[in-house]
Length: 253
Length: 85
Image (cartoon, rainbow over all chains, first blue to last red):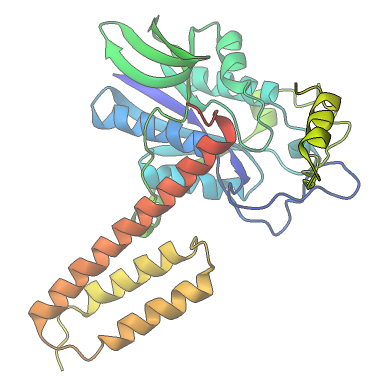
């Protein structure tokens, strides 16, 4: 039986229209609806299913962030995680928190908690970094099975089907290992009201990032955040010749 | 007057309200509509009929959950994966 550590991130809800701050330093987060990163929901679901199949003994949800990040942990607990760890990172440190820091925190916690499997979403829908799982595996020197779309337990390890460009790859890995969840891995359950109420009774531990001995100084500086280019309007052309000329001009024919 | 299903009905109402917070056209619309249907049937006294109504309400809740899941899945698929796949 293995212990599973799941990393979850609180992000701006997928349905919210993102607005860039006028000074281009980032996006507007105040007063905006937040929820759990959809790929992390898939990761939590996979861990909970492992527990239901008696492949895992315990599911621990972890998040790094300010106090509000606890809501995300509650959701994970409502989905079926046994306990949660909130790594407190607030203010300026949170704004410059990067995948490397999260990976270091996850690596440290998975050793402290004696986890055998770490599952995270393949990427977060806010920064789309897609680095945390890979970095965590590297820091721990564990095998990595990222972009998982199917996970099966075999003798001493796991058989993981991975989503790769234009197809699937099946790999076998020993435990302990780091996994990252792709969209088709499973269909996450909905955190219902009764389960959210019950989740309030589950244990949630708070730790400061400093107590884990992780250096949170930024390695990357965000230079500028900008809106995607606005789609240009179409135009009606008088005849075919003009159309062909336009297409040639644009290098399409 | 005895109301044996009072608690079950209240729980159903609360669960549905909770689901309504994510309703695409807004929580207010959902809340108004939900209140309307519950008020409409509030005079019902036949326990059998109430039971059927609760079952129906639970079914609607499951449908809403499924709707949200599908909406999220489709949005993610559109944003992160090719249309062809």
